[in-house]
Image (cartoon, rainbow, N blue to C red; front, side, top):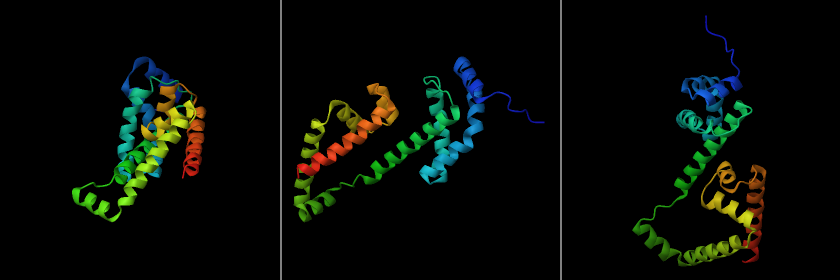
Length: 185
């Protein structure tokens, strides 16, 4: 007869944080692995990538569980899984959006569209000027999020702002950048 789950998630979590016994964390993770897989599949839309995410998220757990105060493991694991998937998608989008800059491509594109290079440089200069005009808190959060590709939690760790403040600074900074870029056209 299989053993009943007598220990709560919180008990197992506390036991792991005290002892560091990976088998305890494994038991806890096993209870919620189907949810991790479901969330990963929802975001990544690929079974193999979702299965890889399940393994990678367990490795993240090993490092992060001891560092964080976790009141509700299931909710915390959901957020960790979602952030992991969003970071994976962000990495994929930067890989797929980067262009192949072979010599022939560069020659052809410059020959056909020489003004596009000038427009891009002008836009980048204007963007730098607009970023420098943001309030300091907005500027640091926008730079960390968009330029350094940090997730919200990493920005919280670096800046020591509350999560809601980080999200607000990014949203307001993005809006202010858009307005500034439109005004400078």
